[in-house]
Image (tube, rainbow, N blue to C red):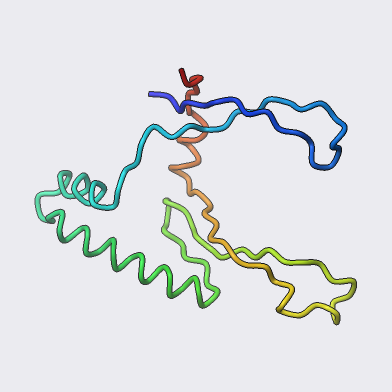
Length: 128
């Protein structure tokens, strides 16, 4: 199985006069829901039901939210880590900066060893 991609033409925001170029953009092949994930995890176990797995994953989401909102990096071992990143306006000096210049936050994910290995061996195929 391969990751499919489409081509999109984009200009250079730093140089609007430059010719536009084509770039690959990953194309989704569908969705895999939390419920489906819990069922698949449960199928690999003889001791846990999909309802039990779903309950744990739902609690995981709540715990992740709480710790990220406290400014902590949440590490999931070899899976990877989550943390909050900020976007803000710039200020001329450190003293001139104030929290109202912060535009918002986003959650960033850094893959661990297993996912990095998967990324290194991906196959790509142009979408039809």
